[in-house]
Each structure stands twice: as structure tokens, then as C-alpha cells.
Length: 379
Image 1: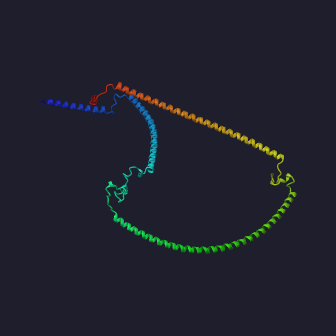
Image 2: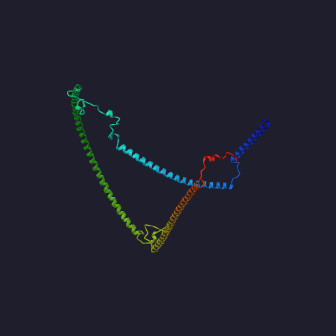
Image 3: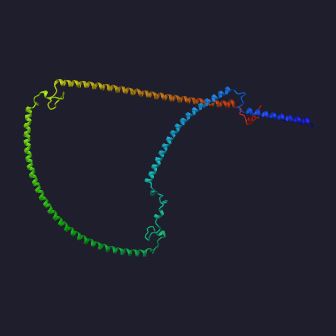
């Protein structure tokens, strides 16, 4: 091997290595989106950004509208669920109360199956020799068998002894009670006789004292009544004479209107001397009454006019409110129609976009091998 050939291979290897390093650096620059600005359409990118922002804003408004409707629907659903829960709770409570009141466990047909006190309340197979449940087929009692004979005889003897003792004690107690009752009755009879004699004597003395006091009171009352009658007659005669003298000498029957004038003013009169108003005063009173009547009529007419104006204002306000409500309803309806039309238009545009992409743009979808050929070189 010549020395010149070795030098040439070394140079080619260094040049190949340098090219590979430059290619690697160029590829890193090309794949870096921050530094790659060659061949970029800034206006198209700006339009794409504007369209994306507009689409995002439209979708945001649509999502907000859907969210508001969803919140309203959720509230209605919650209210309906709460009403359903209340209704079910009331129904369950009513059923439970009916069961507790009308269907307690002891009244049920299968109570004997799960009664916790069933074994305690249950009777044994044979209670005694005379148990009606022990028939010929029960095999609990046989002919000539008397299991409780000794016990029964002993109990009968004890019962007979107790009965005799009870009868003897009752007889003695009855005799003692009868003797004691006779003694008490004799003593009570003697005491009642003495009390009756004392009461009769006291009643007689009280009656005598009462009669004497009543007689004295009647005599005094008669004397007092006679004196009062005499004094009343005398006072009546004196009053009649004084009244006649006052009428004859007083100014009551003189018919003079001046006697009714008061010192407090010309418009004041003395009521016990006044004989009535003069024709001029009567005319003045009637004139004042007529003026008051006209004034009251004028006030009532003004009140009716004010009430009519108030009623008119209320009707106008009601009509204006109805008009505003109708206008608001129409505006909401128009807004709803516009939103529906806009949604339909967006749906049609989306469907058209999808159809365009599927029929025109993506007619030949690339495979995985197609994507693997990119970014493998800087050329």
C-alpha cells in the first residue's frame, strides 16, 4: 500500500464527516419552527389567525348560550327531582303510618312463624290428664292412667282445710263486726237524740228573738216612713209655691229676646232664656247652609275628576306595560329566531366543509409510509 493512498482516504473521510455535520446542523435549523422563516405567507397566517379567533369567539358565545340553557334545565330538573323526592317521601311515610296503625305484626297471618315470644307462649304437648288436645291419636294419655292423683288429693285436702279455716274466720269476724255495729248504732242514736233536743231548744230561742227584733224594726220603720212622707209633702208644697212665684216674676214668659243675650259676645246666647232665632238669623243660616252645600258639591266633583284622572293614568300605565311586555316578547322571539337561523347556517357550513374535505381535499388519504419520508434530510 502506498503512502499517498492513505492520505487521500483520510481527506475524503474528513470531508464526508464535515458534510454530515453541516447537514445535521441545517436539518436542525430547518426543523426549528422559531428560526425557520423562509417561504412563510404572513398574510395568510394572519387571516387564518383572524378566522380562528372569530370561530373561537362564535363557539364561545354558542357555548355560553348552551351553558345558560343547560343551567336553567338543570335547575328545573333539580326542582322536579326535589318535588318527586318529597312526594315519594310523603307516600312512604303514609304507607309506613298505615302499616303501623292498620297492619301491626300480631295481626298478620304469618306472625306465628317469626314471633320472638312464640316458644314462651306455646303450650306443651300435654298440660294435664284433662287436656282437650290429648285425644286417642296423640299418644299422650292412655286408659287407666292418672298421673296427678296423689298431687290432686293432697291439693284437695289442703284446699278443704283452708276453706274451713276461712269460713271459721269469716264467721267470727262477722259476729264481731255485727256486735261492734250494734254498739255504735246505740251510741249514735243516743247522741242524735241529745243533739235534736239541743237544736230544738236553740231554734225556739232564735225564733223568739227574731220575732221581737222584727216587731221593733217594723215599728221604727213605720214611724220613719210617716215622718218622711210628711216632710216630702211639705217640701213639695214649698217647691210648687217657689216655682209659681219665679214664673210670675221672672223673664221667662216676657218674650223679650234681649234677655237671652250673653255678656261673652253678640254671637253667644243664654240657653235657658233663648226664645229662638229671628227671621234674619234664619235667613243667614240657610244662606250659609246653601254655600256649604255648593262647596261640598264642588269638592265631590273635583274628587270624581281626580279619581277619573287616576283611573285613566292607571289604564295608560297598564297599556304601556302590556305594550312593553309584548315588545320584549317579540324581541326575545326575534333573537331566538336569529340564533336558530345562525345555528342552522353554522351547521350547514360545517356539513359543507366536511363534505368538501371528504370529497375534494381528502380524496387520497396518505398512508403511514408517506409520513415517514419527511424530516429525514435537509434537502
